[in-house]
Image (tube, rainbow, N blue to C red; front, side):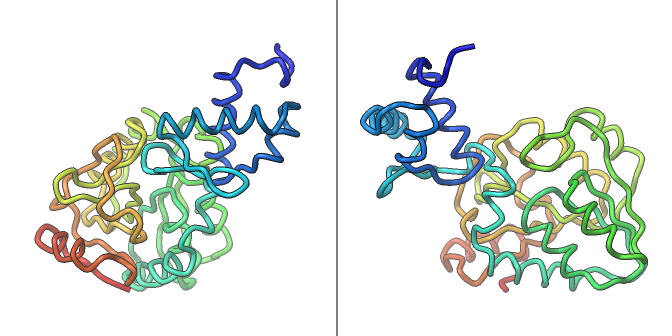
Length: 257
């Protein structure tokens, strides 16, 4: 295996992209130290990634241009629009009733649903390990976990085994997390297999509630989950653009919090 300082530019640039997915920001100084190369070399790498449209240069480093086209890590997402996501989590938790079976998608917003849910007797079904960890804190909750292949860094299980599990259960409501919401493109995510798993969850549920912060509205990612009118409710923050909200309301009920 090559030493870090002997990496080809393309190899080093791919690793820089991985850092962005993991952290949401990279600094020139840290990258230079990590790869044992000059800051000038790192600047050339960042220039090339920016030319490809993959990053946006910032003072002293770089950040992603469009996270909708690849999945940032759970850690990186957690602090994005945190206050808004908290409001969405509270509103979504308020829709859950005693005795229901709820299906929770993976994601930082759905994580805040379980964190804001009172200790009531419900059955929680999920493919997300962080949600399992939270649900275990509530004695009154029954927990069912979908199997599959672990998507490291994003804390969820995926693949055909996940789909097979979803064929065996029925949920009253599915809280769906997305990366893009567009009137023509529908609800989208970056990963084809993740989109397929989400459709299996939708088929297993009587009602679909989409939870997403305002930054996803008007955005299109690469893999379609479902058209807007196949979900029952969209919950988003008051930061959302009013024009976009009005367009969405023609296709789906929207709750602003």
